Length: 475
Image (cartoon, rainbow, N blue to C red):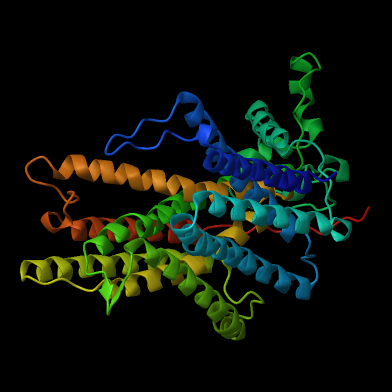
């Protein structure tokens, strides 16, 4: 049974178990803390905490696992050698991106409203039912899925390359790359008859592919049990791909941290503004849901306007390359945060003059960040899938989502550092009352971080060597 299929089903089941447990904790009185008596609220018991956090961890593991397994499994259904299917694959990544954000929008609006106005248990129950329906729909497609069977551990191949290159560190790499060991289909770690073309860079790793005859003496010195001395060019190239992707991934973490402002400091800024628009009061956190709407609009605009125009000028079927789109996304984060900084300066000045700005003025920064996320988010999903070694697509897709999670930790770290550094002699940039602070300085700090992150990314992207396939071998 193909592991991506099995993992998708397994993580859906894990997520479902978590939702059922948390639904039970909202329905069964013994799993809830005792009711408050006036202003005195008894704390939850140890068992109640255990049930609650078990549910949260199951949901977290299930959600993360489903995204990292389902994305490459879905993309595997398309054949890259077919131009039409290749275009459909690009649309698949856009639809996957929309589906994730649409789910965020519905859960953050409809489900939250039901939990607050009807019952928490009903909101969790609806989520559980949706997941059951999704699981049934996924299983219903089993007969028509294209599957790729795994062949060995991809991590073993990576370790082999490092071990072999270290053992053969004293050997010279031949000037003619054709003399390196190409191997046969049995040597491939990707489970397919697809070989990667040799690329320049990381030449020290090429020593792992020096032909075995040239290392016979090393093998004898190790008692004939040297082992892990001979790797193919494809195995070496797979490791090179991972090393080239690493700095791109690091910039993804910082980019995710800049996006994290929408759920943190943007909300704080909105709470400090006039939330009345006419007779309607707009919760500051609801603008995150508005951003999702902007993102879906931008996705349609990108696929129907930007991509066709770019195809005409670049000749690239995808319009812009993945690296170019990721660069546009990172670049757009800079003006978005600059707009937030200017708005905060204006807001502080308005407060000092006895007035306040409408929360509607936050819309421009959300619109720009939504466009940024569409350009970068979809391209990033494609990049970590298509550039990854075939056997590591699930792992690299998981690292793509991991970057989003780590971004929030980086964001928290920056907040802690700013709080310590700026509160030595005054209230600091981020006091409880933002009217006494300088949130604008904090936004300018993130504008600078995002600008530097873009420059670093552009440098690595410019020198990035895209994966190239050698002539495929037929079975």
